[in-house]
Amino acid sequence: MIAVVDYGIGNLRSAEKALLKVGGDARLVANPQDILGAQGVVLPGVGAFGGCALALEASGLRDAVLKVIEAGTPFLGICVGYQLLYENSEEDSGIEGLGILSGSVKKLAGEVKLPQMQWNQLRRVPGRESAMLDDIAALPWAYFVHSYAPDPVPHLDNVVAVCDYGEEVAAAIEKDNVWATQFHPEKSGEFGLAVLARFVERCQA
Amino acid sequence: MRTVRVIPCLDVAEGRVKKGVQFLGLVDAGDPVALALRYDAEGADEVVFLDITASSERRSTMVDVVARAADVLFIPLTVGGGIRTLEDAKSILRAGADKVTVNTAGISRPVLISEIAGELGSQCVVVAVDARRSSWGWEVYTHGGRNSTGMDVLEWVDRAVELGAGELLVTSMDRDGTKEGFDLELTSEITSRVDVPVIASGGVGSLAHFAQGALEGGADGLLAASVFHRKEISIGEVKAYLLARGVTVRPA
Image 1 (cartoon, each protein chain N blue to C red):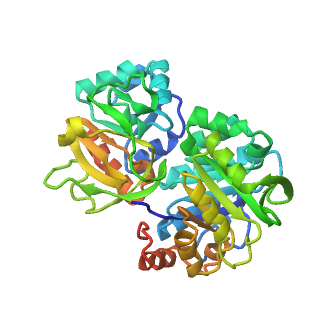
Image 2: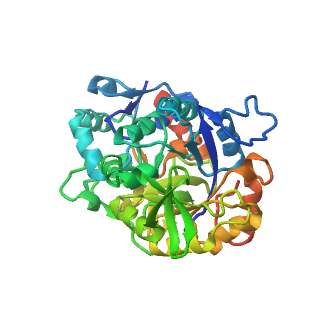
């Protein structure tokens, strides 16, 4: 079973349905035991960093999420679920993320409209292998909705794809069992479904 | 990189597509989900469902439609029409929509915009503005364009953004249904004064109109209904035309 962590925020159904579509046994899960027993865990997130961090804490699921990441369970963070992996965010200073990765989430700089609410083209980081993206598409288009993004600098080695929006945005990272995307694979059409299929494969392996 | 979105809009009443859809080969051309899937396959960047049901049962019907769409549609879905409370917005988003549009209720009770943005994030609040030219500028209309408010469109969009709108959907009532093209003056006035994305709506009748909306209007999203429903123009054609004129779009 793939657990889609249900901690009471916006649209979680799309992630669940997209995983089902590509053959994953996905379920919205709101208790820690189901997360701890899952073959894979997906942490979605929409809205603000602080709201999501507090909701995750209030749901009582934060510790279970930390445990499965540490245990090596395949993990996928999406959008704010990606940002939550870091220590904190400029969006809501003083509220802690999961701290799995060091560093902060920063506001997008440059002369651009915020949020970035659009499709954007990904570029792979040259020479870097990606279990998530290899052989899917050379320059895929993905759907983004965000005003903040993790500062990639402390973990440049983990960035597998970027997009350009005023600056270079770390669009996808991989670190051991942790995959995370700033874009929404569940809203990125065929390409997004291919990414989720890769994740499902990995959970079933 | 700024990428312009091409967005078909479906008017839905009592769970069925309301008007003028001429898709052959659809099992059920009146089913909004079937039609949304067709547009997805054609390369739509996002789909808008606008509930025009007059009855009070509208929300539960729309929640069902959205839930069915979420099973099969994996591009962004925006849903509007009759969103009056935070609970209305939540139920639509929980069912699988990414954004809700707020129009009339946001004018009679502007704090609704802040409530939704505060609880669910600005990114899911689209403020829809129906604008009509007057002697002094553009006036805001409500109730599907029937009621005038005396409010200035430009002042209202500034306020809406302050309240937490993450996007604006601006419809020219003067152009809607005319096929004379977007009101480019209105669109560019708004895109140049707000820093959130703006979807232009109302009046598209030709490929050139789409390009004007992006290039002269500065719109981030180009919304159309009847030209797509009647198969006069395909989404693929729009994207090829825009790309040829230097507008960045996700290829169909």
